[in-house]
Length: 357
Image 1 (cartoon, rainbow, N blue to C red):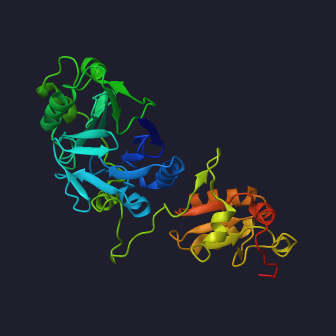
Image 2 (tube, rainbow, N blue to C red):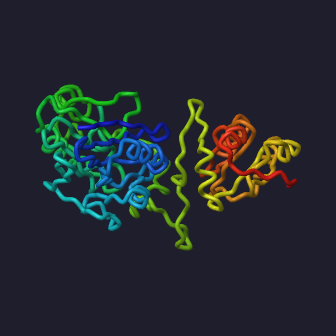
Image 3 (cartoon, rainbow, N blue to C red):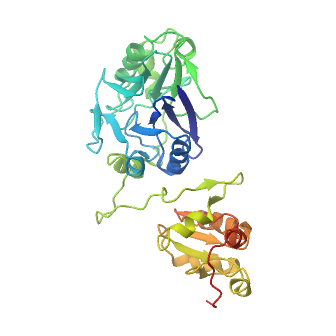
């Protein structure tokens, strides 16, 4: 079986892709909307057919990528029948099975962090995906969103700790760089629920945590009740970050290739950040690109729509990369630098314009 663990730095969320390498059927667990391009790109590159996008619960700390993946790759979305999210294609219950190729995931209801928490167990019981119910040396909180410490204690004891000791635990988050644990380790060393901790001990520990209000909950919960497709007060869909095949460079610059720019005319705004004489030089510019020199960009972009998709262009990608990062810092949500700039555009013999702006 193919297995890949992926990480979102902003929310410390783990996403998991599992696939049958023979049938090419795949599932994804807990995708993050802002990482859809990464996840979908990997799935497409490996030639997998995504059957299901599964969430372990209705998240409060990030927006799920399930709805965007459903639109882009045609998968079905899966949530607990007790999660309150009618948007899901499959409302799973305790004991249900999610199949992909010759593999399967058993659904185990593990409420307590939320009413709709589920844990997914591979059919050989070698791997368990616990979401926020059980973390590495910790547990999900129980002080909001239908949280119930007694329910969570019994969910962990009855549905997770009854698995074989060598079952590998893959949590929904980790904030210390730990990637996995085992049932034996958590039964032995988890300071909240392991060892000889009783239900009353656990309730006392959870009551004394005094955690801060989740900073993304007001955005995430309404969106996740709609499978990650949020709405504005007018009912119009909000734009997603998943709008182009974006790859991030080692320095974090979001990039798209010239081929994508050329094959999607009119789908985004193009900003050329070179100087005026370069705009009309031998390299020319992409037809329709607006000239906004880099040193004027911050001022010019002040009144622009933060949700409008933008592709930034320069000579070779250096200045456009700086521009893309600047715009992201200003709050723009759908930004990409055209990789290779006008040099690569010309090398690929794509059409150019040379008239003044």
